[in-house]
Length: 188
Image 1 (tube, rainbow, N blue to C red):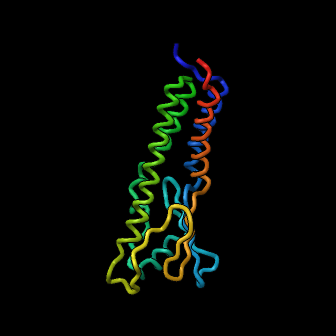
Image 2: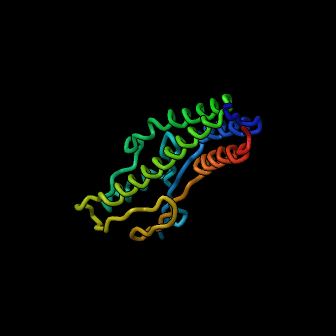
Image 3: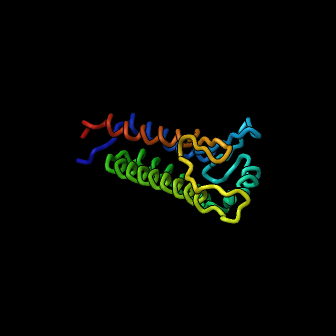
């Protein structure tokens, strides 16, 4: 006999599908730069489709240390991310409607692999931007790798990296999916 998910789990998965789709509208990650000349801080805000914030000012400052410019074109992932996110939302919707535990296991695997790949990709880009500095830059700075989450000191700037609404919402959707499996664990 195939294991079916309860109606409660189906409703939770339908909500997860909406949560995942909604993350397209909110930022997922950000970095704030503080310095004596910028006490209010400068922002780089990452949405699943675009970069926002004080990009031009940050790029102007990064020029002095020889860092490549940040732009939407610098991150080809931003072009495919909407399809991946909406695909995950549709898969979650299908799993909710089909109500089969095996499909939820597969969905969780896809979600976990996608999340791990996303974190790896972020770390790769942070390393690339922080270590591939132009040696002819006006200010010589040792290569660095900003953290995905946390603080870092770069010259006279303190940077703070953090997840924001979209990142938290994705984590909540994942945990709700795990809850569905846990809640339905004794059902056959």
